[in-house]
Image 1 (cartoon, one colour):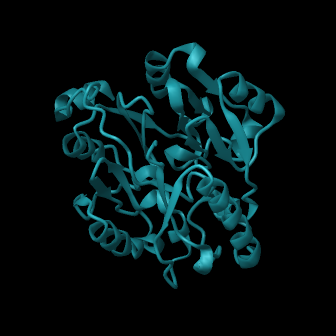
Image 2: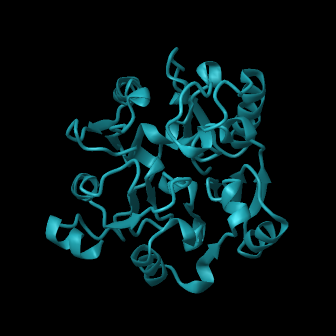
Image 3: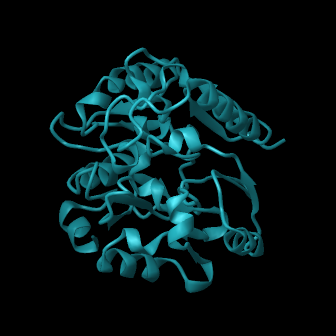
Length: 291
């Protein structure tokens, strides 16, 4: 029997929009409904639990964005690179995630305290295990990619984000099974789009419209042939189905007020190490040429 995929989630007991650290939060201060957020979160959790195993980290008072577990760290095998958050409002999450990872048997790598990196929100494994896509520009620093390559023994492909609404890589970029990529090209600079096109064949790329990008269609969770997301247009759903995926919409409007969607609310805990295709850690000079 196939071992189920595992995800980490955090109940939205402390969730609120109580500060502004991204454009989605502007105009939404204290406008969220904790009851509605809890209902939407439970729907997503139940949908994922039908196909995967969901584990929980306890929410903490005063840390409303801890619900977005994707940012807690980047996992590969039994190793995790702990987040270093840019904004003071989220820095209190770091020790809670660190303790959870240690208690559950992960080897924790910690970046220098002054180096910014926001976990699996800004670093996404190719689902075929060939490389790690890593974002920079708003929340994570380019220099952190050298450490990711070394510690996780992965080839790192660096992508520069240029649109403030898409401040994390997972808001506009989602590697899917069978080498398919769901992404929003306008979120990236010219060189990053060229890097994407050089590594993902046209037939495997699914670029999304402005409208789909703005409903966080790319902030999706992929479990086998299922894609869980907040909302998608009829056209995008048809394109995903044509590529072999079953689209499952789970409305997350309350979390959109804080700049998060389905992927933000989950952290995959069992990212496999694909020894047959890992290309080895890049040296700093090799990495800089590749990026």
